[in-house]
Image (cartoon, rainbow, N blue to C red; front, side, top):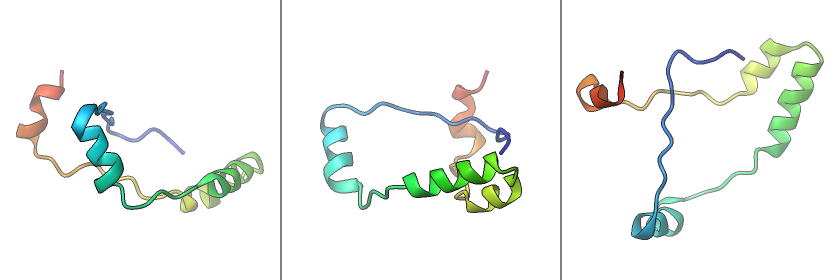
Length: 73
């Protein structure tokens, strides 16, 4: 329920890579609308700890400093 100590990077895909991502690499799509509504309800009811336990774990991508150096200021 607080900002994470790292940033995320979103990249756009196009052409053949976009097709492969959609047709080959995506193995499942899960509708998390009910979960989002449950979390929202818990937050509105003043239950942030319970809501936080329902969130999926967010992990930084395991890339070394050398690989990411050009992305940092």
